[in-house]
Amino acid sequence: MEIKARKIGNSIGAIFPKDISPEIGETFTILKVEDTYILKPKKKDIFSDPKDWQGFRKSISSDDREWDNMESEGEES
Image (cartoon, rainbow, N blue to C red; front, side, top):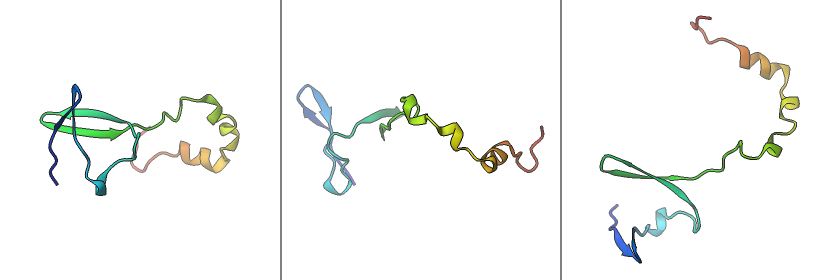
């Protein structure tokens, strides 16, 4: 698939074909790696609102703690 960079006002932009277009209003972080541009959708920081985590510690079961503390095979302490 090929698209062309276009002048849009005082900026340069690209028009997404309908079959791969993002949602209107979706925001991205743009990265440039050598000659490649990467558009990465911005995601909400899951740690940004402490209220989202209220009660989380109480929800962890003893099985969860056991898995969290388990060492991988071959891993040295």
